[in-house]
Length: 193
Ligand code: ADP
Ligand code: 5GP
Image (cartoon, rainbow, N blue to C red; front, side, top):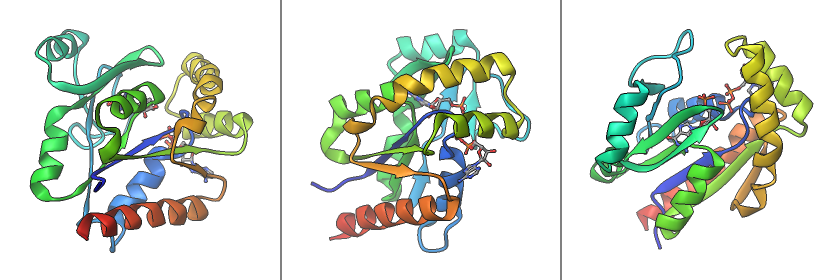
């Protein structure tokens, strides 16, 4: 079965956004992959762009979208709502691209149940929870209370990693990027056969 989705999960601060942005800029990959821009009720961080990082919506709007069945999957993560719009998958199919999803472990589980055969599942984390905390602090855009919540949630998320096809340890960014790039290239080449 050809794979057309790559689900990337991992605790907050693992480096998912950083690695995905590098993949999207990579000369070899950029025309063959599409990032699944999620909807969220979380507040926009400094530097984030509407429609590029997320579609930022109110809780009311998000709940209406749930009612209308617009999401492929959605979940409450660290106290906010996040969801993958069904259009994202359609767009990737139309453009014949591999869709990269940055979603949490609950979202990954929903994709596993709905379209296991179409997806590859990758879990990213650094080698310690201490390192996660350091990264969230140094990113400088997350209030301390929220960092505590994200670290608490990280312990549970890491317990899920054995459900993933690949676990990528992001200690050295360049190594993690190369490992993920290999996975993406393999999916692309299988898809083109
Ligand atoms: P996530 O999207 O998983 O929450 P980010 O990509 O925002 O994580 O990364 C969290 C912070 O850690 C950012 O400030 C980022 O620059 C930094 N970071 C990412 N990868 C590494 C790495 N390998 N070593 C050190 N810092 C990193
Ligand atoms: P952040 O607020 O740091 O951008 O993301 C917090 C968490 O929400 C991360 O684990 C991220 O993977 C997850 N997330 C982002 N978009 C979605 C989505 O559409 N669905 C689900 N289930 N999780 C998401």
